[in-house]
Image 1 (cartoon, helix red, strand yellow):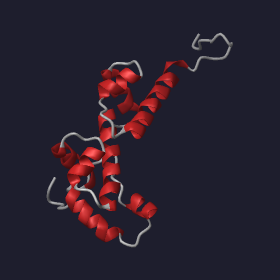
Image 2 (image 1 turned 120 degrees about the horizontal axis):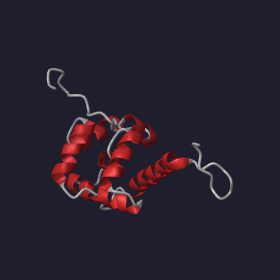
Image 3 (image 1 turned 135 degrees about the horizontal axis):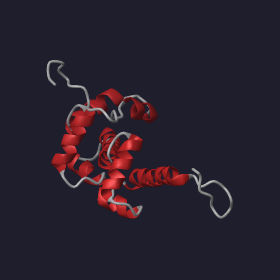
Length: 155
């Protein structure tokens, strides 16, 4: 009891390993196609499971929902584009796959601790003279936590 055998006679890794492989495919797709119009339903269809099942399993494996992971990925890319300069906040919003400037700005502020326009101004000043690879590590958003409040007396 306990192990199923494939035709080859080897142990079947079981449903859990298949679920983890499926979740990795979803995460890879988000990493690759973050600028495309993605939603949990489309991601779930791509791996032949329900949106609810995907959300529960993704959260259990990675500590956040697929939507949260997607938005964090988009914000990371937006931060790089804002540091680079040459694009307005609205252009960056649409470039990273967001369709609502309000949602983009709200999520950006939650993750980074300041508005996209304030970030762009600060990033240009702080990143001056620093190699891009260092700037990317120092200024990346904190995953699974909201940015600390700029005033300790505020929640």
